[in-house]
Length: 443
Image 1 (tube, helix red, strand yellow):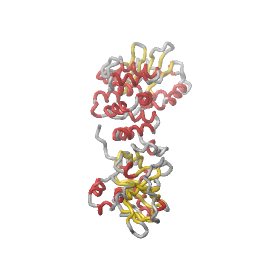
Image 2: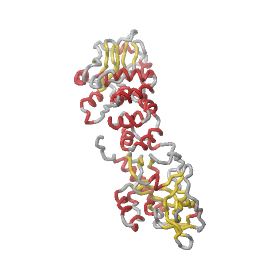
Image 3: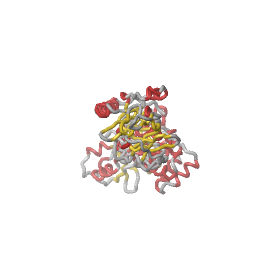
Image 4: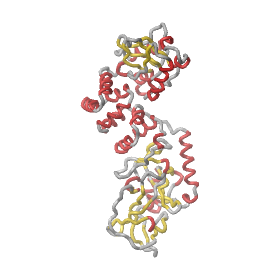
């Protein structure tokens, strides 16, 4: 996996603002307690006598609120693990809990739908910081009394907190709030609790760019990664898959059920999908292809017939095509409809009435042309620059340099098979540098 640059200043600033805002709230700052410091701490009745020890805290996790309410505690009383509702807790300090009543229900605790055990299910588990755009691991969680409710308000990911937990008990109750990340910026993944619904909106994740989602997919463990895939739209995931390291993408496709992997592959650009399928074993590739519809399967099988080191193996088969008598305004409408493929479209293929290649018109020429002009009036006397599907990348690079464009057409005789882009050639010639995506200029 490529070395990641440090967080952009804007993201660091956004996280710092959120942290300052959280700690600036007086009721939170004065009541902040460390979850790790409370585990094993005494639970006392009104008279101060110890009645048990804290095992865990229970939070309601229905996705409705950014700061989940803590609804109770799991307390060890003798050999039993009893549930103590939050309303029975008169006071919670960094070192102990005081109860309003000595009456406890000593039946063994049973988790209910929508409940999360903060120590068991969240502490030391992977989380996504959608402000910082990174996968983190919870070294400590912070609780605070907000109004009448005890809530989960923050997470600490610092090494200092891990050391604090490993040290003497007197250290464990000393939180390090300067390291806290606001819980509203956190998206949990990989919970072992099947009933727990994640925040249904996933607004923070949907704001991330494909490359940022790709980084998260690479960093998450398998269960968390599959949970993320299941909670995002296939087209959003496909854009992220195209940005992933090839080895990480191969692992993701292997671990995903073939029918689900086929849905994602169908949303990817054909050349990117073919590249991903080439890395699978033949049996895995065949099984995945069987789950695709006929159109996608034929398209990908056609690409897979070419060696990955030639133009046919790296071309995209998505083309915007116009006939010579089509009006410019109609072609512009096609381009608007193809917006989701904008990275693979830098020109429009012009063909005659028999479907034979006439020209490859740049987007700039279409922008400055009259709306009512026939496309045929924009064509050049010079033939378009083309390469054969068997052309090696060095030959494609020479063609790109000669025509000073960001793509060339791949043709078989007069039939256009696809387009190979400059960034695809660079990816092939300089693979250790990672994926390049040149801006699609209006040429």
